[in-house]
Length: 151
Image (cartoon, rainbow, N blue to C red; front, side, top):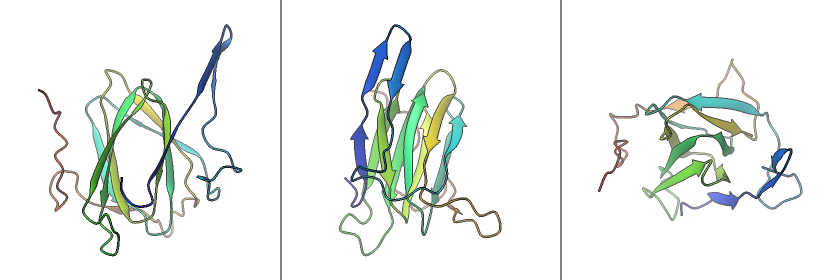
């Protein structure tokens, strides 16, 4: 696993009324600080990526559908420099994924319907000085191909 990345399996508690799933608590080791909470979605087969943040840690949880979340360690000083991690999160694998600053990441909806990601980043979005650095998802130096892997 890429240095600094954390994955917490989530427990779903169902009953006759519905279900409850705790995502992130401020009293657990994984928590850093609160910046904001937002929802982003992906339509089937769509890739949203690559991007990274210089200051912000992201905490991704897929709350509907399934996403393939891919991370690339572009940090030259990291012991896992150039490592790629691939996670399939969502309905069939509920988890909270912590993505540290400067780890490049993106996701692709792999379910048949729109997938939804809740993110709890450590920093609020600043439209005047966004900590959002984008890389083309298909033309780059990252050793990853977003195509489905059959076989």
